[in-house]
Length: 144
Image (cartoon, rainbow, N blue to C red; front, side, top):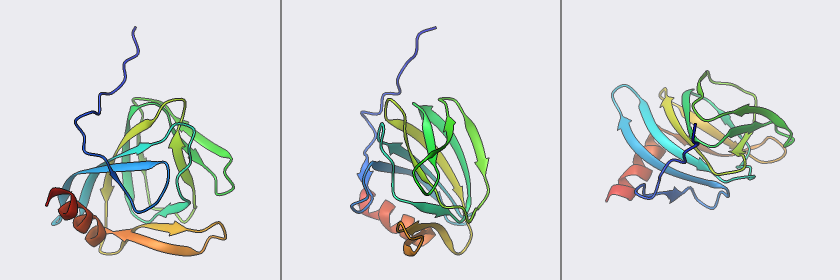
């Protein structure tokens, strides 16, 4: 069977601040049900900023390997293309990245009234948060 790569040329990728190894494209925001569907692209052999998931995340790996790393940068888990995972909110900080090729992963974030993600420094201090209102603002900025 031939391995195929996902053709993402028609996706309008955006950067999130100056965070490295990460691009995103918000597909849909359901404000009433507090659901955000977004595609993230994690750079091959890169690790994104340390963070915690404060909301339920359902993920589907579209391309590559979705790699998760412990806070110290050691490999925790590899999710191959085609993997579907339901991850409840967690206090455990981690990083994410791609394998040998950029990973493209669909996230369906099932939120609450509060924070979806906490961004952390290497000492586990919260440096930023990302919630529904932030994602709505990013989506408005992208769509004009």
